[in-house]
Length: 68
Image (cartoon, rainbow, N blue to C red; front, side, top):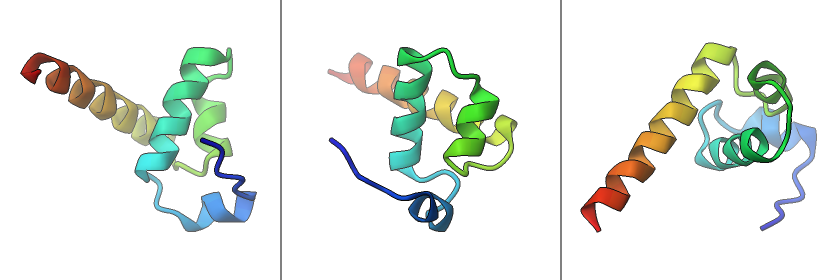
């Protein structure tokens, strides 16, 4: 799903916004961009914060799979 957000949209949304996390996870999987670059481009704050959000998202996905 394309959101067609402008950079200003990214800056207005929360650093840990679920849509930003989904975008970041996809970028990590499909590109060679560094997490530092992704965090900067998506306005997610410090790279450590972005890494925590991505880890939480992947752990949440694993728990959902185990429950099914």
